[in-house]
Amino acid sequence: MSVSEPLPTEPLNTPPENPSGGFERENSGFVGRAAAAIGAVLILGAVAAVVFMPSSADDSAAILTHTIARADLTVSVTEQGTLESSNNTEVKCKVRGFSLVTFVVPAGTYVEEGQELVRLDTKVIEEQHSLTKTNTFIAEATLAQTEANVEKAKIAIEAYEQGRFRSQLQALEKELAAHKRNLRTARKMHDRSRALFRQGYVTDLQADGYAFTVTQAELELKVKETEIKVLKEFTRKMQMEMLNGNKTASESKLAADLAGLAMEVKRRNRAAQELEDCVIRAEKSGLVIYPSAASWKTTPDITEGATVRKDQVLLLMPDLTQMQVKLGIHESVIDRVRPGLKAIVTLPDRTLEAKVSDVASVTRPAGWWTGNVVKYDTVIELPQEAGLKPGMSAEIDVILAKHENVLTIPVAAVVETEEGDFCWVTTPSGPQRRILQLGDSNDVFIEVIAGLKEGEEVVLNPTALINEAEEKARNTLTQRKSQVDDASQPTEKSSGDRKDEGESDRKATKNDEVDV
View 1 (spheres, rainbow, N blue to C red):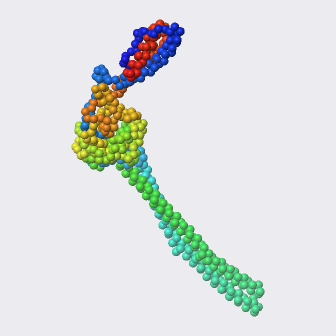
View 2 (view 1 turned 135 degrees about the vertical axis):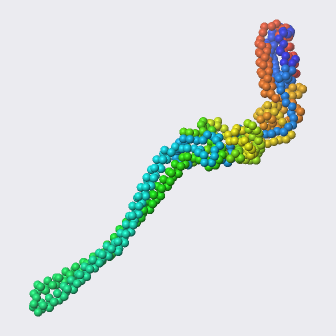
View 3 (view 1 turned 45 degrees about the horizontal axis):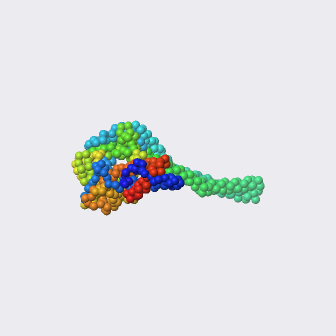
């Protein structure tokens, strides 16, 4: 009996009933145990029959196969990019702060040397230029006044030393000489009065008067001597310190005014230069393009009405003899990319052979506009060829490896599991599972190191085969379980029927065990 055949449902002969009723009790327990055993055996048999039985003619017609053969396997990574020049002349904004663009030459225009490229709004710059000119004039006037004060301070020092001080000293010395003469005269008069007093010609009071005159002359002389000493030692020093301080202050003010004037002149010249820089002209003849905007922006950075800042790149003038493509390589394969690798660049009108010239060591910033995909900038250097322009779209195949004369298997024929990689090989008895040892791969084929031979045919849709086997196994298990449930239910039968049924169950169980 085959496990794929249904259970017999026709009534079977049963042994004669035991008069004591013992057979009926024993048969009732035996039927339950036999039904459970039959169910377990049938379930295992159904799974084994469905999974390992040869495919029928209908199943073979739905299987797609591929013949294993040797071939050259090229492993590459494909990315999209745009052409750009590796040597760009940058046209930058030289005006400080933020400026408004009032005119910009269209991208892709071929310009001549000296042609106007960009024009910025000059209203603010003109006001600054006018203000700086006024401030320069004020600084020049202040400087002239300070220079005069310095010269005045110098003249004041010389005038005091050579004029006022000497005149004061001479006046005091003249008065001192007069007081000395007065003192000598008073002393002579006093000496004469004393002689006359002894002779009786002068009274005592008159003699005392001449003595007082001498004392007064001496005091006046000492006062003048003191004034001269104060003038020389204190007044002169104090005046010189004050005059020198005025001179130093004037000279410091002069230095500050000179620096202020230089600053104002610099501001005036810078404003004049920025006013001139508001009109940007081409330094050479060539093609003009706009710089690439950030990927998250929807409009270019340079357009009429846009606001630009100092040192921002406004335009590019590329060197068309040095072209390249910058693309992003995913982090999963970046370790295999290195400078010098061959690259195939497919343009809309031609295909070029190029090479990798540079690979970034750090990733570009990932954001929501990139889908948080981590990529590394890689530069592909293109050969010199006419007709290459910046902005052209290109598809680049970077050749990572090339394996010659190796066994290959289609990617669709391989199933990856936790136990390893498998495929199914067609045999006369049906598809047979093989475990594989695989090597390098591309998007279509995988290198086979072990597990297959040249000329063998593998199934291209093994997942369909597995799903079909699983579906058949589920249907068979469901059918067998239903039959076992029906067989295990007790029914009212004659003793002969129960005997025949027991014998039939024992035979069916024995045959099922043999088939499995």
